Image 1 (spheres, rainbow, N blue to C red):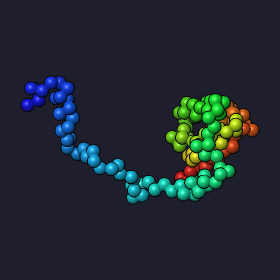
Image 2 (image 1 turned 90 degrees about the vertical axis):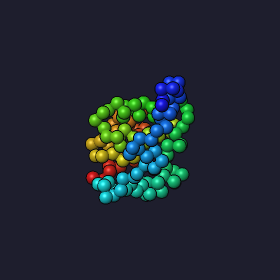
Image 3 (image 1 turned 90 degrees about the horizontal axis):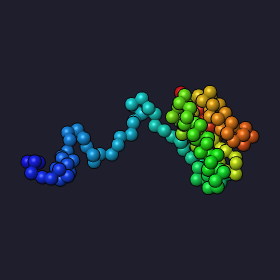
Image 4 (image 1 turned 120 degrees about the vertical axis):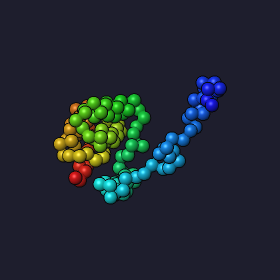
Length: 136
């Protein structure tokens, strides 16, 4: 049947054939607490970040020096393959040369490693850490 169509049309027709077991219309499933993962609840953190005095990622300055500072710290974190995904995803917020670190990490040692990398780049007196060690 497909041999009579041009190759492009044939490819499009084959892409339209549903594959068994593949349901493209269903929404992705969230892991439930019964599957070994507890649901995340960051309500308190979100409430804290609503305060005008709390630096948040949307307050990252757009000047070149702050963008470059945050970029250098993020690169240093990503380069360290011994860090967990959470540590790689710590928020780095630079405002007028002052860096704020926020987010969960898996251990106190990891927290210290992230803080040390930021201090090495920005200067130890220019880093504020709000990193939390996630409960086990």
